[in-house]
Length: 537
Image (cartoon, rainbow, N blue to C red):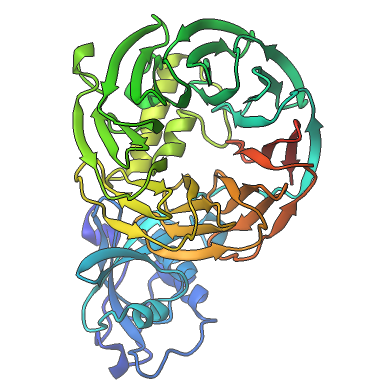
């Protein structure tokens, strides 16, 4: 798109220095900016110490400039700038209907302690300039990112309580298309539930010990579960039958990760991590080991399969290892790429910025079916590329040393930032589906929200009176739900809410497991009281 077309009819009208000409908005009589002008009319007066206008350059996430330099009011808010971006990208759209405007978030690059950070514009440009000491003499570069157009409604009430398990429930997870719910726990069974009727479909026996971890394949056609004896079972969720049973490890299996759909249309490879300090990569179809990743000195607590062809493993030996997962031959899989060091205690959990996109594969919030595997594969590739947007894959690690580290693991062995604030061990971390935020849950009874790009601390969510075990995001990234030892789950609005918007009571004991369905309609919680509860709006 040429700069002239991008400019959307902007015509210069006077000085760039707004303080010399307070009524000048830098453009005149351009239909594309009617909405922008209107959206900004209600704003307060600008601080007298700042010029009334500043010069900005908008850029996409790929770094492509949109429009020319534009002189805009210092008190411009996010809605006003969203309207302006809409007009720049759609110069021929003369529709005055604001409902067509896609919401955007905006980031400015700010130097702090010699490091360049991406800082989100949370209210107005004026506040950004004041808070971070940005010079109004220079051009302010703003990167925009489109937000979800659909809105998930907050869950407020319990619609179903599903008994059946005879011991504590350790895992609940929705399938990528949201049509099935699976659970596993201390009673050695795996159960599949119908999400429409919330009735049991299959009770699967096969494990001889606690089911410690479970995972859906991104195409939703297979379900993997692993137990305390080191046995891995692959299930057909439609029939409720075991496809294969594998004695995978000599000690208990702590984590399972499937290869993302956009990397392999067959969707048949998965990795398992164990207390025996090994990680193994399996082919689910042939039931054979493709690679054994040896190198950790102690139990491997977490494994993640990234969107860029790398496998990440976190261990009690205080390190995180990055392994290659791609290659023409099986022997190319499993080569050690780098070791990430920094934590002073065992590393409990990892989260990747692309976790949600990799988990849901080709399915979006509408969860529509595909005519063929080829169509699904194309949709998964398109969805991942749209999400990636020229940015590096980001990873956050959480540890018993109470800290988190933000990494760009594909590019560097050094952390981007060390994040402190929790005063007890970090239990669980989860990136929002759009990658803008991540949440950390801790034994200190708090959930903290952080900027997903820079690692900047944003807010602490206070309310739980027991350790927080797990968090889950809504598919539009506007809500977060947390599960706690205090027998409740709580719903939070992000990033604005510091107090819980809703408390979801009803369980008689600790809430261990939690998941929000990909279509956004329901939340499932699993508890030590042996029941699953479904929550809806």
